[in-house]
Image (cartoon, rainbow, N blue to C red):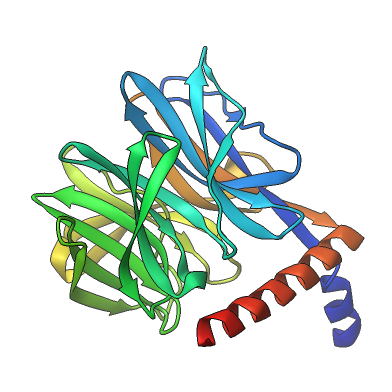
Amino acid sequence: MKAIKKILGLFEGGEWKVLYKKKDSPDLIEFIGDSNYWYADPFLFDYDNKTFLFVEAFNKKTQVGEIAVSVMRNGVFSEPTVIIKNEYHMSYPDVFAYGDHVYMLPESGESNNLELYEAIDFPYTWRKHILMKNVYLADSTVYIKDKIYIYAYNDIIKATDLYILDIDNKMMKHICRKQNNNKRSRPAGQLFYINGGLFRPTQNCEKTYGGSLIINKVLNLEGLEENLYSEIYPNEISPKYDRMHTLNFSNNYVCVDVFVGKKGLGCFIGKIKRKIHRIKMKRRVKK
């Protein structure tokens, strides 16, 4: 019976979707893009009196994530444009402003580096910088208060690391680490304030990847001390969703991603393609 379940599991999969809404509206809108992609890891960014949505655009053919951007027009986000594409997987495009510049800190762990992108012609042209080499940091998240803090999930040792970024010199200083034996601390979006309190969203991956979203109240930033404030489950949005793992805000909008399960031969083929791709990337990194 276990063998049969394992075989059937090879044909199970699904796709992520991005939902968004105005803060004062109860109605979520599904983000629509190119049918050759599915979309996840949404980040909102206000710039030049416009609202932009940056997402992971997962290429169904190559089974590799790319970075895309969309702009709000008349209450709806436009079809996204791919702006960063590499042979390795990219996701979680955390965009932030510092000084007179706009930057993006995407997940680029499959390259074995932590990459920072600087906007040359926002939002379509970016210059890459390498912040750290020989690391696999997932879902790195920026928080700015006097200093530039970066929360990062160390996918090798399963721990949350906190860094301070010297952006002028493109240098990282490690200041704290917290082991995540309960699989509930992986970053899930930018930090935000409620009634003067600072909160950090994280993923609950105890039973499944992105099982729910956890909202933690930050007690001691540089000590990585937090208390559980609330938990959001995907079926609270709709019974058809069974996972969620990124929550973000702009001045006027909120966005989240959700997972819709599927079954069939396409799921099996996708898994094989991803497996082959990962083997190729591991060989590339070793070289």
